[in-house]
Amino acid sequence: MPFFSVVIPLFNKENHIYDTLTYILNQTFPDFEVIVVNDGSTDNSSNIVENFSDSRIRLFHQENQGASVARNFGISRAQSKYIALIDADDIWYSTHLEEFYKSIQTYPNAAVFCNAYQLKLSESFTQNASYNLQNLKEIQLVEDYFKASMLHPLIMTSGVAFTKKDFLEVGCFKPEIISGQDIDLWIRFALQKTIVFNPKITACYDRTVPNSLSKKHLRKVKYEFLNSYKTEEKTNPSFKKYLDINRYSVAIQCKYYNDREVFNLLKNEIDYSSLNKKQVILLNTPSFLVRYLKKFHSYLIKKNIHLTTFKS
Image 1 (spheres, rainbow, N blue to C red):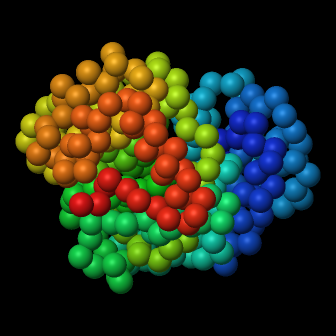
Image 2: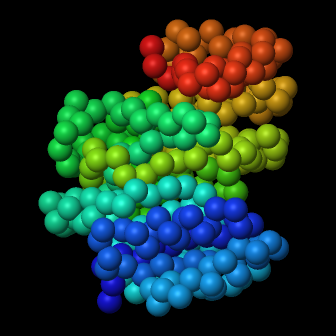
């Protein structure tokens, strides 16, 4: 039995999957299997996977059903106790699995393990994620996941490992949530299980890949799942604030795309005390100005300058 099962959902990533598999195979911790679930790709993605000769790679095929179904299927086929995820367009550095192993040895009874990560904002600009934690030097149990994730989430899909048992207990990825299904899973983990954070940066999330929130029905889906935790947020102030910040993020997307229906739904749910002054101002800024500011923001990123409303 390998120590880790690495699960990759694959859909039309022929320009990325070779590099992704190479990152995995170059890990300093070699005891793993790789489960690639081809989710109905119509490009050359699966052929690229088949050209790898490493016996640790297992390729499965399914009709296109989305990343949640692909990940659930891959995890169901996993032989290992510990599952590590990576999307087919993200980056692992060579010690990624080794740092997970260190965290597991330090806290063997925990359910979820996350490493620090970077954000690729442009081809030439990468920034470290920021966390609301006092200690950024040691592997640690996370006391309040939601409070720690107000700037960037502690858990990033390509920067997390968890036990197969705990994943099944919290209910797997929900296929009916077609946008934000990963955030929903992290919420359920945070509400029910023990999370460990390792401050070593071992992965990179590629934010240059286009965002699906340009589609109205996906913004509506995200609104609905963020509102599915009404009971829990009433008794958990940091969770309420975390949800409000996520609602704010989607609301700004609505402003950009002039989606008044979903924007009004989100705005009515947000407690303004959860937001900082910059966020409140932007939430009340006309849509045309939000679009201009977004273009200016993109221009600054090309100049390797990143401004954010998530810091006061």
